[in-house]
Length: 457
Image 1 (cartoon, one colour):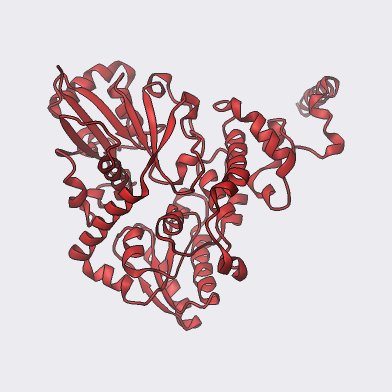
Image 2: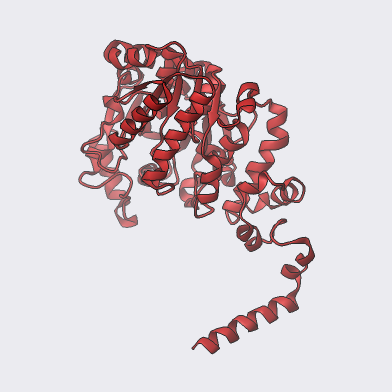
C-alpha cells in the first residue's frame, strides 16, 4: 500500500494558524507524512520576511514532519508569476517527487487561493491529487474570481473556513459543488493563544508596547495604495480619519499597526496628528499578528477599513469594532469583478461607521437570522453581478434581492452600468424598463451605432 503524504501550502502566519487549527480539530485524516510548504508571495521576497521568520512559527511547525520552501524550489521565478507549461508538468512532478522524497506516495494537497499561483501551479503539478482549500480571510465569502480549469476544480473536496460572519455561507468554489466546512473557533483561538505566548517570549518588547496602555484603540493599516485602490495620499488621509474618529469616540490612547511594508512616513504623520489631538500614540514597528494584540492589549476598540482582523476581533474576541472609508472604496473599486468587493461590502454592511457615534456605541454582531435575511441575499446578488458566467444559478437570487432591497443605502454595492449589462432590476428607470427586452428598439440602436461609426470614418 502506498504511503500517504499531505502537503499544506501557506503564505501567511494567519493561514498557517488556520491549517494548524484544522489539524488540531481532526479535520484531516491521518497520514504517514505531513509537509508544510511555505511560499513568500511578497513583491520582493528576497528582502521580505517569510512566515517562518515570524514570532510563533515554531509552535505551528511542530505539527509537521518537514518544512519546505516553494520559493527555493522554483527559483529564480516568483511564486505569483510562475506556473508550469502543460508539456512540462510530468517532468516537474517527477522532479518534485525526487526533491521532496515523495516516491510513489499518494499525495493530498491543502492550499489557499486555488484560483491563482502558487496554489494553482501546485494543483496542476500533482494532477489528480485530492485538494482541500482553506480560507484565511473574508475572500471565501465572495465568488471565485477566475474560471478554474475543471481538471483542478473537480479535484477539490471541500472549503475549510473560519466562522467570521456566523451564518453566512461562502460562495467560493460552489460552482464545483464544493461544500464549506467550519474550522472550530475554539481550535483557532487555541492556536492563536500559542502564537501570542510565543510572541511575548521572543518579541516581548513589541507585545509590551502594544499592551502598555489600558484598553487602547487599535488602528489596522492595510496598504491599499499598493493594490491601486487608493493613492498613497488618500490612504494616509484614511489613517488620519481613523485617528480622529477614535479620539472623537473618547479614546486618548491609540495603537497603530501599520502594514509591514507601508511607508514609514505614514506613522510620522499620525504621530504629528496625535500631538495636535492630545492623544498618546504607539506605533508597532515590527510585524506581529493583530490577534496577538487582541490577546495582550485587549483593545477597547479596533478600527480599520475592511481588514479581516475587524471580524476576528468582533467575532472571536468580542471586541468593539468600527470601519472607516468603506463608502469611498466601494465607489472607487474597479473593475466590478475586483475580488475585494465582497469583503468590502460585508464589512460595510455589518460593522458601524466610526464617524457615527451612536451606531458605534450600540453595535452588536448580527444574529444568524439577520445574516440570513439581509446579508446572504446581498452577497449572492453581488456574487452574480461579479461573475455571472461562473454562477448563472444565482440570477434568480440576484433578481429577487435587487427587485425588493435596492434603496439609498444598498445602491452603494452595485453599479447601474453593471446591472444594465446583465439586464438586472435597477438597471434603468422603471419608465424605460421595456427597452432591454424590446427586439425592435435594440435593432434600431445597433443600426444607429453602426451609422455613427460610418459617419466618423
